[in-house]
Length: 310
Image 1 (cartoon, rainbow, N blue to C red):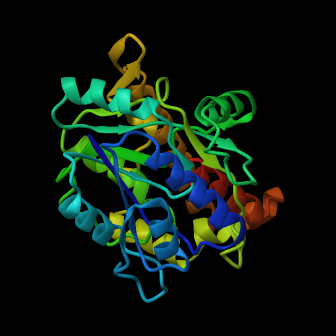
Image 2: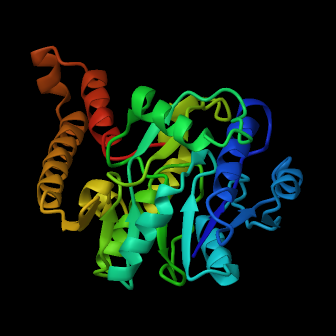
């Protein structure tokens, strides 16, 4: 069966509500599913007791206070009681369809990474889990009202315990680490399975008030740049579009479209690098043509942002 693990933000206000919703949905998947919460964030121990999930307060942190991804993954893989594990962000509602998908993939592939697109949904209140139909109701809402995000928005990762042995010291809460996890699986020649067609992963919308610059700061501050640097730069970016396989209702399929995804991203990178060169060395020409530096920087930022996410 499956062990899910995560780390939270402080359980305050709306953030506390959606994190409780997510964790509670995980505990209702199956009696054999284990849930692990890592971190001493405000309210974590109380929620762990309330939901009867395993809680480990110790979580190594960067001097900024953000937790290290490599320490979380190493600890969870060491203590998990099940052979398959899943890291998911703590605001993701996971429904029972993930279990059937994991069984189908693991029966055919002994070594794999499974992930999928998320659907963004406005959830402002605690979910009424006492209603026997809560799962079907939230699924219907997500399919009707939710927005499916593109392949660079990755919020859950299923893999065999021990799959990730060496991870750079990324900090959670900034960009790039999720893309690196995909790249690493591909570099190990492991099948990467896109389960979007079979798994409805629901991201509960929230703001970025925890950062003074909001979402822009999460993408572009010093910690974001640090994550890119410790991972080796954007040459390794991986997304759901790079999956080697897709899980469909009829079974596993080869994802031949992934080759086009790589070409599109390479073309975008070439244009972005060209714009960087123009910004650095084209002042006289820009003045002659009436092009402002800010216009080129903004265009390059949009191209870069299309390859990642907060």
